[in-house]
Image (cartoon, rainbow, N blue to C red; front, side, top):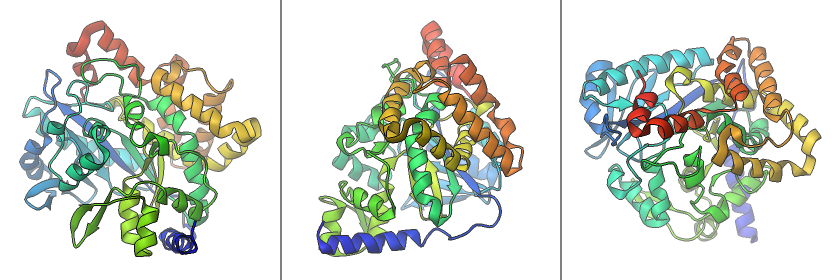
Length: 424
């Protein structure tokens, strides 16, 4: 690393760290970005842009536009967003004090969405991928930057047009960013094992219980741009230096998106420190856990969208993982030591394909994780531990939602699968 690049990395790390508070009063807040496939009764993708007039009427939310294109609706407690594919809609909640508050907002917002979707005879699905419509250019929504990303990344980018994740944000303070990033990434395998739910796409099963993770890791796979990173990070400077080695996909100048060239390291070698450009670069790094400066949070991206009766399961697990981060680190370091990262990488691969049918890294691993998560939720004092019931049930049955959906599909095909996944 040149002296100029080293100084730029140090300056970017300092700016980045300054967006996270040095202390916190009370318990950490949480927020959620939950994506949902919307389909016609036969399973074909439904164009969610048709919903905007009805949703505006029902909710009073304010339209958000990119040029003439409505890309979302914004309310006080929640908002709707158009995703990469026009067959997927996202519900975003404001920061909440606890899971019960967040679930109440989600329930109310989903009720408005279902009323709008029902008027078209369509279905909102509680799963992590479009089950029938394949990833194609035709499915991609009209946001201008998506075309640029397709040109740069190629066909793997199109998986974003079909997938539906359940992303959690938790507020963090500065001195815990690194440790919680590491625990979120090394234990992404746990959220995939317990919450994988994308086993059927393109009208078939292709060998994955979590097709989201199985297919999207093909994006710059040699650099681990999606999913579990190559290794643990030592500090923020180390993380930014690693990030800078990735290809710089896109920049934004004077409000216009433009294709970038080379790595982000080469960009700052030539242009010096540009924090807005770094945030643009960082936005298109899709590791399972990411630090986000907008609200001082860490985002967990690895879970698929969940079946509606248990829609809170992934968020509950995520809060538990981050609250129990220190206890989990001490426990796993004691059991696995230097073998932790390669052991979890191997398990990560297995659960993508097999879900909870995969052999655990060691006896009692998942139970030990859930016990520590439950204890951490009890300590928060909001009664959130009661929301862990679906996770315990899945562990006992050795079957996650993706495995359940696959069994339904193998028995009755798409005609059985769509009603099974539909949110009512």
